[in-house]
Image (cartoon, rainbow, N blue to C red; front, side, top):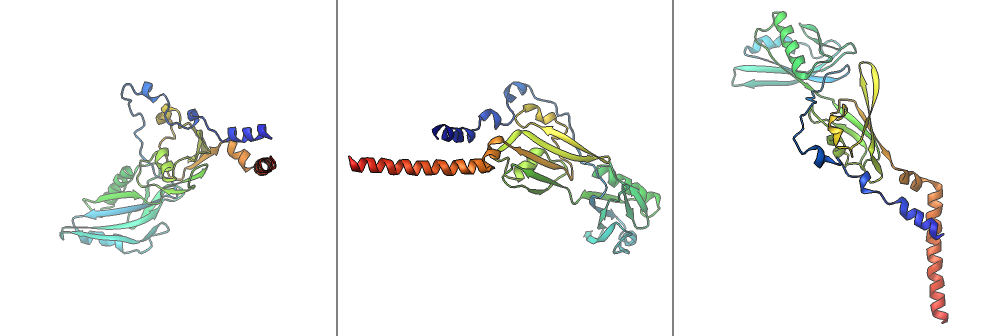
Amino acid sequence: MLPLMAMLLMSSCVSTKKIVYFQDSDEVFRQTQLILQQYEMRLKPADQVLIKVTCSEPELLTIFAQDVVMGSSGTSNLTSLSSGGQSMSHAYGYTVSNDGYVILPAVGRVSVAGCTSDEAAKRIEQSIIDANLIKDPEVTVRLLNARVAVLGAVKAPKVVALTSERNTVLDVLSQCGDIADTGLRQKVTLYREENGERKKYDIDLTDCNVFQNPAYYVQQNDMIYVEPNKSQSIKSSAFYTFLSAGASIVSVVASVVAIVISVTR
């Protein structure tokens, strides 16, 4: 029984080599590293976006306020702002269609899939100008529903709402309370949908070169899975439960025997 108890203790021990992030970084970062990934999130089908149109002549914006539900993709007017009586803006929420378009009243379909928010805003501005609606539109586009699902051996598995359009896998994991003690930092997997395909990326957070990983910056609708270590599997097994109970019984029996021996002496 003692060897079995020793095995239990060993199964709960974790080498620091397996849990320390960015190992050997002192050597790699003796000189500053060039950031190769100037990442910007790009719009995808089914994304929800906020589109705000501003101009110096408020009456020209009425065309955008006439429809409460614009076609099949717009929602109700979310914002109406004024600034010193000189300019006004109207903001609406849209869903990017499966073929990558948003439908604007009086403007029509504008292709935005694959664009950054700034690129989509420029396309919409040009479409408004081409339609002879407003000469000087200023358009702002913001992604509304960006989120990442986190599963596996983290302290608080959940769906994380992205707070900006530049988020790393570390940002997301920190929102989940970090990887649990039972999680393998060398075996973090990210699943991503790109161009109609689902891709798998392996991430090793103990490797200081993780910053160059193509999945270091997350995208909307990514899924992150952290694999648990073997000791967690052992602890969850019926054998481990039986072994733990047996060890407890042996400990109690040993204590009783020791008391009896001391009394009878």
